[in-house]
Image 1 (cartoon, helix red, strand yellow):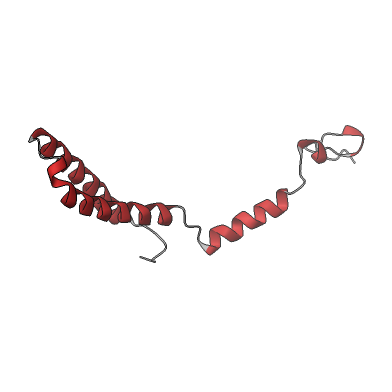
Image 2 (tube, rainbow, N blue to C red):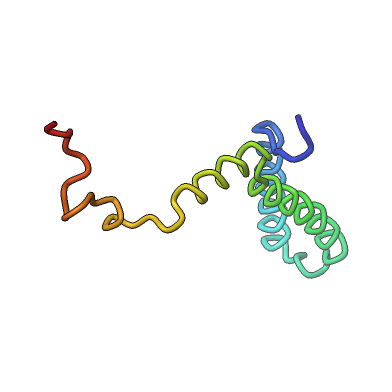
Length: 99
């Protein structure tokens, strides 16, 4: 896996990390120990937060190929409007020439 992407297996691990943290919070709350476990929770939150950040960055990463395609489309569509597609004297540009 290239470092710039986030594979499905790793995403599954992140989901499980989040679920485990949620279960732990619910359990500690039920036992009345939620605030008493603050140092441990902060450490766990830090780990999950770091992985969430990596996920966000990797999900929004644009490969060089995708960036080039986006550049081409943006360049081709610059200045284009539906009105600019009309031929001379308002002719429909989608109709074949009748020559």
